[in-house]
Image (cartoon, rainbow, N blue to C red; front, top):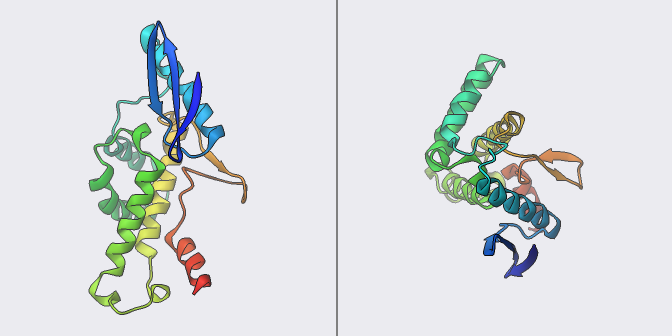
Length: 187
């Protein structure tokens, strides 16, 4: 197995039964790319010998989201907040297979929501630091909790550890306010 870079992203190349496979690991982190490459090679071998996958890769976000909501034993208000938040991200991700959702997809969604909020009539002409991103932050928190559920149920392999804060995060999801704070300090 070989790991190499194309631009900023690591790719893997390996051979199984004289057939060459080249795949993107979709990450800039070499250590993570090595883990992903090993998993990709294992998946090819599993498929060759009809060994079942560890996770249920056939389920879409919408299917697992419904399972997640049904399994919640939290307060009714919390569930209502999560359902409200899902009205924004379900149309974007509902048909995607859970393991196919990347950090890039989430960050693109996060940026899209931020721009939508900034372009609301009530926010036009305001500085970024004066705008509340509470709704978008609740959406990201809901996604974060949902992906933790996916890991617990085996739809995803594991959490990515944020080594700076020792907190576990799925693909390094951050609240928008954290991003804004960093930008505000530069102003």
